[in-house]
Length: 65
Image (cartoon, rainbow, N blue to C red; front, side, top):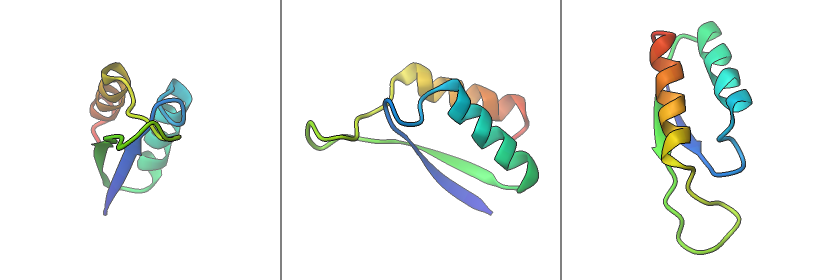
């Protein structure tokens, strides 16, 4: 199973969200496709920082996901 996971600034770009995704993936064997959101205006949803995306990648790789 593969999940598409969008990382947004201020919504799911924190350690708690990363930990929750890793925990979920431990119980549901899967692959995760991280998607960097590209904003189209100054709306509610904005692109997460590069560091946040890197933190997701590191956590997933560390846990062999």
